[in-house]
Length: 406
Image 1 (cartoon, rainbow, N blue to C red):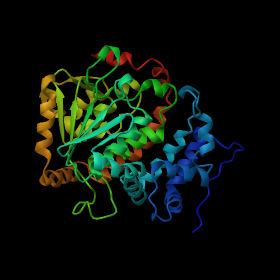
Image 2 (image 1 turned 30 degrees about the horizontal axis):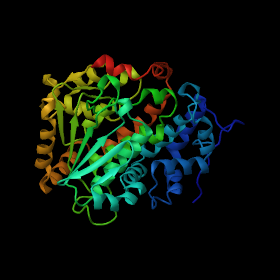
Image 3 (image 1 turned 60 degrees about the horizontal axis):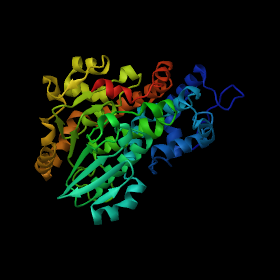
């Protein structure tokens, strides 16, 4: 099969003009199936996001930026970049919008990572793993996943996404684990010294410095580890039977606050426990970006009006407020968190829980709903990443935000 070739009437190897991007979008609307089919050997090879984009840049240099072009921007501040990642967003929007291609990519990203497969034997033997930002300890069939990005209040970075996906894979693959628990570790930040913190959201300092990646962070977290928590792990053997994916129940324990990306995470957990002095916040409109799948999932959980107040207006929902019932299953005093976590994990350790969570997710958010949303998100988030308002806002240190909110 001859694959159509995209060309621009320009001598430049990279053209970031709106007209060039519109041309790419029109080309992909017509030819994405042929392009994606050739990259994946007619959808017989499952390529992860990074490898798919690498191959696309290599074989279609006028359509998707190549490694050399992206490397030239690596290390530049966000304000100094040309915005080549927007063209990755145009490509991924087209792939995800196509039913067969989009489902194939979603499946590719549900497969276990090579890093997790390499670490699995040791984790299964010892019940512990130190991945860097994330640590795992299995106790009595419960895998406790703890985030230790201590210096930045568990703000999310590229390394955080890498470690979280590895951790989720290990929990789902480990035969001795029945339930996963996610919690933030104790902080070394002077304002929160010794206190547990769930998450401060995206690391705005790293976003300002240009080290937050569109593909490896913003897209990977949604279609990678968060999707795996919600939908399970796609494995090649029969371990998942009768489900298509290997699924396990998950508990989230919220200490102090769940801001931004941390708040988004709570929406895919089966049971959420919050300390009575904690709060939930999704300040995406103030930051200028789209809060992942928060717009889709928060509306389902809390309703349209509350979702607009949180996402558009920046409202914080404190654990003791009535509206918090849509987000937190239990609210307990901080000193009772450990016991509440253990009790919740014990309640969820049942095959019937796995079957019923599977059916709940099938009803709440079918894969086609996820795919449709993700296709639009792929482009909108790429554009927002380079919005002038975003670049202007992220220059201030993110550490001031939770200090003001606390």
